[in-house]
Image 1 (cartoon, rainbow, N blue to C red):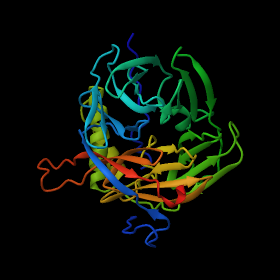
Image 2 (image 1 turned 90 degrees about the horizontal axis):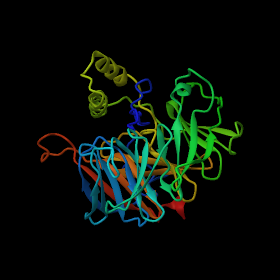
Image 3 (image 1 turned 60 degrees about the vertical axis):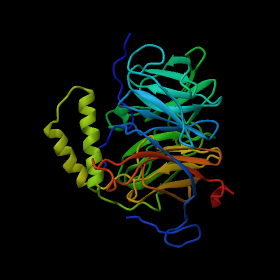
Length: 372
């Protein structure tokens, strides 16, 4: 039976909506700004998806090719490891591949938000297994015998009901049963602008939330509503969208309409005008945050994003520094000493269509000062 289409957590939030550094390690143009060594780059196709999963070997990464409804896995040398999937409802097929996550055994997991299904593949494309998922499920970066992730309650987010904004689910891959469930702390927390947008459980217990106007909320203790630390991101500066941002938002809204068989509407133009006049969020998107193996919190930001992009890093609610990467960051993943970043390149004179190329950049992060 076909499931109703489920919206993904990356949908634009128009109600919410310059930092530049030319510095290296030890330079004073920005507090704690570092850039790691670029070790390789790999071209990938254009896509409406902004997902990347770095697999367990730290040398293979997978992205979603939304136009062909399939997944492409490549290695750091630029070789294609596997291309798999097609539109459909059978084993190994997709309705709407939405999220990616890595398996502990070197596999890749794909969340299909249209079919409500999680499918495990070898990076070559061999089908391993599949289970059904709770609605609007966004996985954590890695899975083992169970796949864990969060679902957003839109009614709570919009203030139309009270309760937990996010719910964590653990789904057993052998049986498909939900073996764990935990609601996020409901707050409220002292934020003048009032809008909490998204949350992520901390591996050691507690939650981290992104909120409006550059605020982060770190809540300690599993299920605990107290012990909250509210932080205004030190590197956040209110910044209006530029025309590249507006063009991307326009394409996202048009794609959203196309996926539902709807034409362009006056509401899109009205929304774009509001977007132009509204400072951008601090965070890049709700999906581009994670805890690394040492429980440090990494968040992709919307700072600048012309020649460079920035990831901010926190530990125990304290800002550790910013990691600078080249070009316009769209998604990232990290494991061990490797950071992989999905980017839009700057459109150059050889891009006759004016559309930026898309690529994966691989960085060695072993020597970042806060990792020592």
